[in-house]
Picture 1 (tube, rainbow, N blue to C red):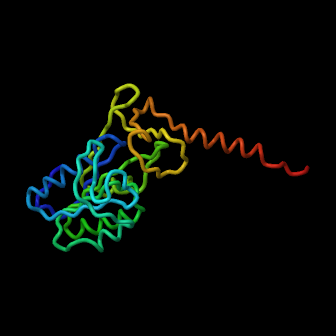
Picture 2 (picture 1 turned 30 degrees about the horizontal axis):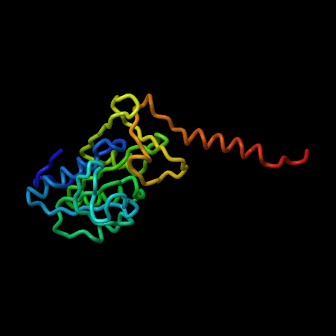
Length: 206
């Protein structure tokens, strides 16, 4: 969705699984805004330093300059009042205050474009992306290609052993899967560990 200068402020969300082209679409929209001579500022979470500290970088190596922030309120603090378009990548790595920040910016007449995962490695909604979807004017759902069967993929399969919700990684740590091929194996491992740990606990004397 390409929106021109006449709009009164809006929120655009680009969401989907990993390897579905979210960052590429974000970069495309931001470059078009720059070509149109709009004032653009771009932000990314400090936790995401996979490819570059100074750029948003897609898995296909498209890149655009960006500023690192730790908390959503820093976006407001670093914002030039003359900025017209704001890009935010990896929205799922921010806390829920990102929603209020985006609403505030859109209400002040800014065009805010956010890209991020809609679900985590267990297939569950990845906050704050669901809340952003609820308040956005424009929503783009991107699909990848399932690495197992080649069908359209909307899930992110974790390939490394970790129970942490946030594990930053790319190819080798994750792959795209369709609904049929998606296997939230870590969740099964957690249940297995809970059972094993319960069996190890000493029983109280009766």
